[in-house]
Amino acid sequence: MPRCPPFSLPPIPFILILLTTSCANPIFPNTASTRKLLTYQDLTSGFTSKSPLDEFVFAMPDGAAAPKHVFEGRVELMGEESGGQIEIISGELGQEPAAGHLPEFDFEFVQSGSDLIPVQRGLIITQHPNWNYFVEPGHVWQEPGDQGYTRASVPFALIWKDSNATFNGEMSFLFNDQGVSRVWYQITQETCLSLSANLWGLLEATYHPGPVAGAQEIRAAFADEKANRFPTRPIEKLAQDYPGVDLSAFGHGVSPEHMTWYGFVVDGVNYVSGCKTRFGEYAYCGSMRAPSYSTAKSMFASLALMRLAQKYDPALRELLVKDYLPEAASSPGNWSTVTFDHTLDMATGNFQTSAYMQDEERFDSDPFWLQEYSAQKLIAAFARPNNSSPGTTWVYHTSDTFIATQAMQRYLQNQAGEGADIFQFVVDEIYRPIQVGPGAYTTLRTRDNNWQGQPYGGYGLWWVPDDIAKITTLLINGGRTSSGEQILHPDYLASALQANPDERGVSIDPRRKYNNGFWAETHTASEGYDCSFWVPHMLGISGNVVLLLPNGTTYYYFSDHQDFTWTGVLREANKIKTFCPQS
Image 1 (cartoon, helix red, strand yellow):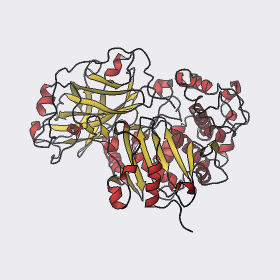
Image 2: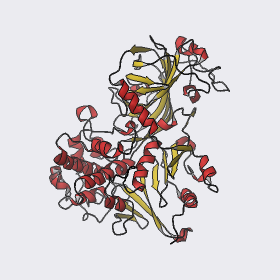
Image 3: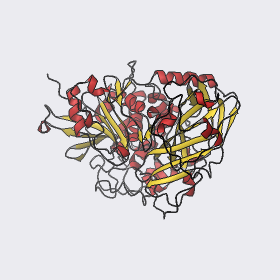
Image 4: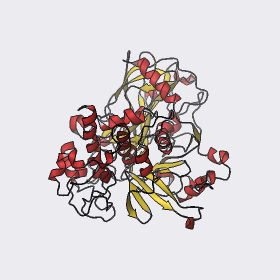
């Protein structure tokens, strides 16, 4: 699993200054009638600040009126390449001076009521040397002090190039039918191991009003997206709905400054935490993107196998990798009997050392991590020698998931034609039917065709809490949608989730197994439970955890301090519904 950008080059001065004087934050928040920060005067005449502002400036305040104007067209920022500031909290920026500035921002939006909807969703590849974008739906409203202008705010994220590392922020501006004010932006939260940074600035902007192609369809699709969101309640309500539950166990073990968000899904409700930043509560918690890291191995690569098997061939996992990837013939390893199943189990028998994670975590030297084009990356993935028989030794390799993903891509093309794409197949055949939102419809790919090459498979997706609730509900429901359609192969799913005692995958150690991209850990009566049980789960290197508990509940958190702890949550979840039903 790759870490965040390898900021290992010698550091250079990192403060890139446009705004220099201070603007003290008030001790009371904005309201619709008494805004003290990011006022009309600030956005139209300019202001200076030595830091980002309190996050509440981006939230639609209580008492805000309906918008007077309707936004449709483009917002174009000016001076991104030199405007704004960056403050390094931890880590080093290295020789990357451009990283202190936003990429070119020129995007279309349409408005629907109080919603401001970006036309382009998901990962947006930019020409910036360091950053790509996510832009999420925001809000528009009216405030008395805005001189008749309508106020808008939009959540967005910066994504480090060829990385999962994610830096979340928001921007805000005023507009009417003819023009737009300056735009204030700030980034105050990240999910990244090697760098923490604040970015902020006030930039000139241009509004290009005009009809947007497919505007009505975009509005209708977003209305459906909102209507189909998973029911949520604040995590604090869990103890109210299930008396006796100790809330302190949820989120425990991850320091607040490193937590992105967490939640617990039970009985069709997603109990969600807030989204803390260094400057207060993020205004769009439901839209705060967290990087998948290796949870993609489960929620992309493994699900792809299950759907392919259900749709095309129940014997799919026994197919040989070499029959679909001729590149295996040049490998120093032995791929003569390695199956799709072996590869997703990370038990190909081809490795340098079986010492825990030592093959995987050579981020600065392993060619697999350094190659950006698909052909070279695949050759690098096959570069390990043979040291055991397939299916016998577990050695964690994201490169194995890349191989499996490319093998499934070739298999799919044989079934559906040369234009078929394995990630788009997962989107169309799994994510859309369970109503995962469009922010999850893109993935990191190799550099071919302006970073539109082959999907990585083992990392490179982005989730919001709603996505986690919907995908885990599909898994807990046996691979059936809410309408009852079986979209995942039930036997493959049962094996991956340790529901088939005859197919538990490969041993990691005496307590843990790995099966087709899913980890599992066993717990016994010696720990105070009434039975023994398995807890299948998904993990990501930064400290991402998704537990599929034996009572049909899900616990998850996304963080960036490599904290992996959930013992307390198991005990609390067992109070809600026992893991050991009485016969």
